[in-house]
Image (tube, rainbow, N blue to C red; front, side, top):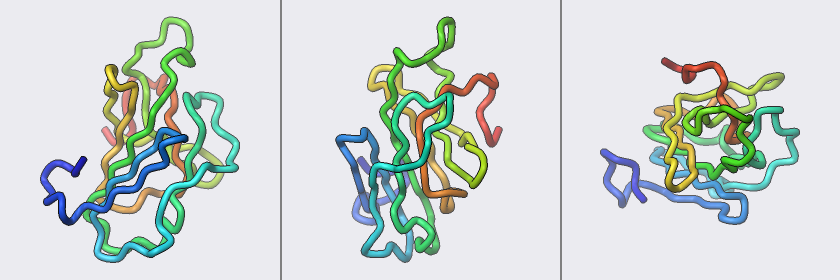
Length: 136
């Protein structure tokens, strides 16, 4: 699935089906090694899935659009939580930064679209209990 607003022929697609992750990318330089892999990072307490690494993410150049789509487990939400309180989070050293995200309740996926490289290379779907999404 292409990123809306971009010609499908310019979008590179990567997926890691067994981890429920997909990345769609428009960039001038995409290293041959770029892809997705299961992460060894410890997930945050609010994780609703397993972390995924964006391999060779730091080598991307002139990123126009990067879309991360992650499956999440709605049964892992805390009791009383809204099913829309889910976000993509990226590991930025000592913390997990939540990205502005959209939830697809039917597909149980959460999507973040960026116009630059993410601030880290490990992503995970998380319960976002702040009542607002990062970047707003």
